[in-house]
Amino acid sequence: MTQSPTLSRRSTQSTSPLPRKSRQQGVDARAGYTFLLPWLLGFIALTVGPMISSLYLSFTNYNLFDPPKWIGLDNYTSLFQDERFLQSVGVTVSYVVFGTPLKLAAALAVAMLLNSKRRGQGFYRSAFYAPSLIGASVSIAIVWKAMFGDSGPVDQGLSFFGINLGGWVGNPGMTMPMFILLTVWQFGAPMVIFLAGLKQIPADLYEAASMDGAGPVRKFFNITWPMLSPVIFFNLLMETIHAFQIFNSAYIISNGEGGPAGSTLFYTLYLYLRGFSDFRMGYASAMAWLLLIVVGILTLIIFRTSKSWVHYSGDAK
Amino acid sequence: MTTMATPTQSSPDAQVLNYNPKSESAGAKRAKSTIFHVVALALTAVVLYPGLWMIASAFKPNAEIGGANTSLWSNNFSFDNFVTAMEGIGGVSTLQFFTNSLVLALGAVVGTILSASVSAYAFARIKFPGRSIFFGMMIATLLLPFHVVIIPQYIVFQQLGLVDTYVPLLIGKFLAADAFFVFLMVQFMRNLPGELDEAARIDGAGHVRIFTSIMLPLMKPALISTSIFSFIWSWNDFLGPLLYLNTPEKYPLPLALRLFVDQTQSSDYGAMIAMSVLALLPVLIFFLVFQRYIVEGVSTQGLKG
Image (cartoon, rainbow over all chains, first blue to last red; front, top):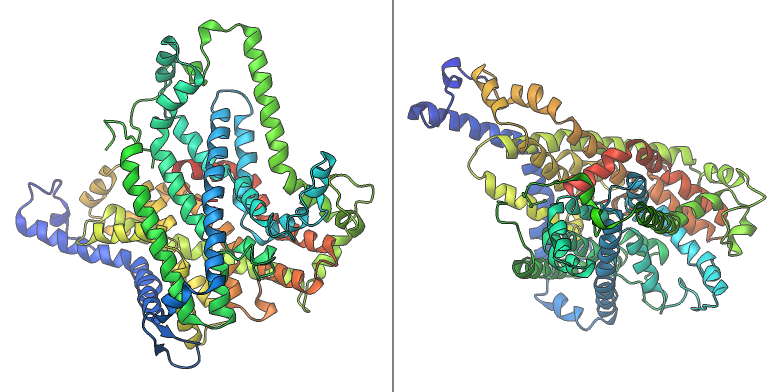
């Protein structure tokens, strides 16, 4: 990648004569693809290739040992007659629909609380962030299961206040709240991002609003929310996509079975069980593609609707 | 990610939300500050409780954990659970699991740093045909559910005889498959002044020289956040090892923990929790040491925890 001195002496591309420019372009093109090679290889071998072959497999019956057998749309049609599949959709959707907004609301509320020049802000920010770093680990899933076990510390703590919910881990009606608490507990990551966004809002906006006699509620809806909307949009998108893919805690807490009564049979857990316990690879591939399509549509919806509620300030690009 | 380019900062204390400096006395200010700390501390207690409960339980005798103990204190604290936990499971010592986790995590860090920085340089600093298309695709993979690719990947690795080796777990790291890190580095490099490359070019430096002697040294903060996060993600990874590893001798800690849970079936709660603590220990130490980098990395790059 050595260049002749005459070639590299040009300072601006526009004034350099054409032959040199095109030679520089050739050098850049070669260098570009050379540097990009690791990513490009990974992209083709680990993403595009597998995506195409899983799309193909989703139309087949494949058990890993016999050659795949083409069955057309059968996997897709039988998905919708599979009660366990429908249950896994229900479990996952209720997790996403309740867990994500609650988590983001907690994140935003705490970020607004912390957005001040008071002492200790750094400490609180770190303390609240910590769960996000470890929340998806097997260790925390084990701890969660122990804490929410029948007559575990959480139950005990609640019964002290006279509340008896009939257990969490073993009670099909309470497993979902337990998982939602686990995700809300990890509000720290979006909170830190909100906090960074809040610090960018010019303080004179709030001052001017105070002069005009605006209360905290008006300030929130007329200043904080619109100014923060790009950040809210980013967090909403990322958290939604992540929520669909919850696996570790579901696997550990339910011993890889999705029980009790299928109440923790999250989509990815069922996909895993279908693919790697029953070796129904075609069926699992169909599930994977359906997930991709749903997540894709959701992303599109979030992007589309964002035009009406996300405000970018005029001088931003 | 932050798109608000309006100039910030006016008077420093006007930053405080809902607070008008002219209308408040010093007493009201102090009262507000007290309320803030009371609320924030109460919240801290709630957020940290599971972690503290875990650590306390690891030192408690079994009888005091199983029997629903909300308290964080015990008169019978001991290291017994850790002794049991260190013995390991399935004839493999916990030290071996630690080593395995460490090998995988360090491999992930080395692979990610090498591949992501090189690829990011191409995206950020070289003009070549197709760049923006590939960049768009790279961003799209950020949003791609991982599950669409695991089945074919597994089939390929199985046919290559690579199941039950570390190759499937590490190869993606050396091929910049974690697009997040590529993206992070691209963003970082784009903020470095373009005159740097221009000057180096005039002095006759090619892309290799520019990359190794100008970009890499300047990218230190991005390289550090990448190292920290790729280490922690690899350390906590469960699905990858669950899919690909079969022999306990090769298990990293999360998989060993699951084996431990399966085999003891909650009979030895104390040891199980002690082992959970051991498995999290490096992450917790990392967090305490690199707190600043981690939290700053999240707030500027939008990294997931």
